[in-house]
Length: 186
Image (cartoon, rainbow, N blue to C red; front, side, top):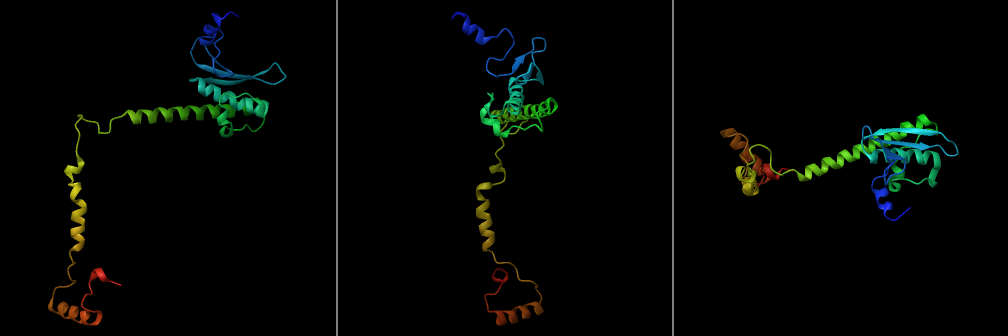
């Protein structure tokens, strides 16, 4: 192969294969990504599915490769091998189910990453007419703690305000001591 054709082949493979991910190719008609794997030592292939992104198809391939080839398998995402679902057996149906589960998880992770990026890009002020509302100014937030401290310094009113209650309060003062009030309750 000549040196001039090597970069062109790496950029757009004629067969539709993904230039980075193993077991993944793009359908020309729909533009979706498909994944399949060949069973070891047989001409049979296991169809893993059609996916909207190459990463989802690659995750499906990784599950099937681990199930069929074990630890020697060349994976697209070797760092995530421990988190991938394990098929119940090496039957094509079990491998397809586990591959679909891994692809769905990869798609959910991609959606979560996109949502987090959108949240970071969103403005910090509420939507509406675009005006900034200073809630600290509205609720007098700088003075809230000062006002709370002043409220704690005020002694609470005595319970009962009649003459009999005043006599009872005087008796309590003699019994409990003069500085007995609600704040010094034991």
